Length: 561
Image (cartoon, rainbow, N blue to C red; front, side):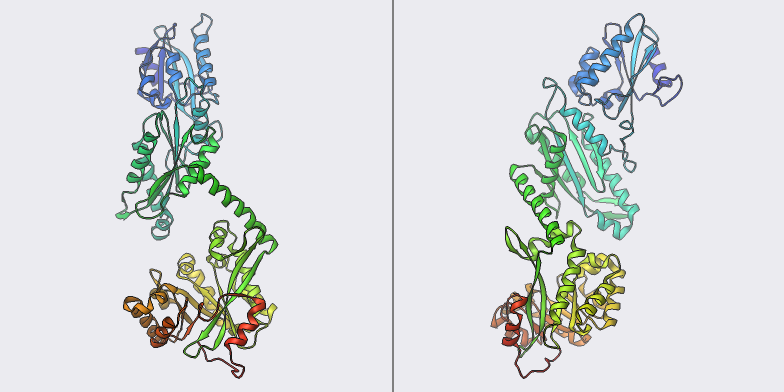
């Protein structure tokens, strides 16, 4: 025991040089017959020993029980231990590079009293990373290596394991409101909660950003992994007290269990990610286990991603145009341009079927530019002063080039600025803040109209009216639908119409489908409307027919709306 105490306190070399390198953080002693002497608690933790391993009597039994050593690493350590006990064995051997023991380094030395000691300490995975600098947890390289080692163990030593991928929804909002330092404090606190919730034989890692992972070992039944997932959702969803602020994030956890859900590391990680993406993203969060139907949906999304990238490159889109009319007489004032995707196999797709995917893929910038140019080119062929309305995405504000792009679209098409109206949502303004407002002011100075779309559905729509003088407010269709029932919907429409009049802003109601809705809008003083009652979106070739039907031939100029 004295010799072991000296060995643990002394310097053990990582490269065989006496007195160099960090001290070993865990020790295992054994005699010439490879019977165990002392196994330090730190050694047991580094090896992730289950209860059976802690009761081992021989070095071989102990190493075999470790989920963090594959069969090659066990064989290498056993061979080195046997060689050390031979008469010609040296006093110290360096066993650093053991790929089958990711994240661990070993030294072997003779200890006083006729015994030998294996020193164990954590190391980066041989120049490829190992520890996340922010949280001190394992990083992605370490996690994938440990997972591969657990899956690569011989069948007689292999037990089930589970991968739990966790994402913290709402952390980006914390960064925006309180700063990245606070967000990092939340990540560190979440890491501590995860570490405290698992066993020594499990591994917690931060993979990237707000994404964590847990490798759960010794999973003999799916219920064990499900129970851990439920505990982690509850634990991570509890409020965080950071610098005097009470912060809440929403955990989403995806679970994949080996071998039922996959036998390769990459496959398990991919399937856990599929499950996480289908976990609840609101409220208290939740978890999902991988199921075969998720793989089918994932394949469909991947195929759609590939097709969408090709569509952007090959301009497989087209614009449809929905009429906008003045109230109460219903005279045509212009059209809203709405994108459609002519999918080679699935036919004509509406925006809701592909624009969210385009945002995730970073394609909205290119799509938005195309829509703007095509809409201006189309509107230039219509009788004056019919306008065209174009929706803007947050991505179009990010690089500050929007004003120049609008000027180019107007110049190339010959469309007068006052015949173009650009629609933005509250989401756009919140996402791009002052940068968006500066560009909108410059566009308004050109003579382009600016409208707030979906007014009344956000959290700070009224606040936005104080910081930018919109030309138009568009009442969301959800209020129009309920208008005939009276109550809150009617009160909201009346309030928005009055607000528009007092601020000098026109008010358009969207989604008008019945005469009853139209009568209610006129009674509340709404300026303009659009919806199926006046016409569905139509291809460009059908626009002349709509113009002829909705705009009297004697009308030279519709009144402003």
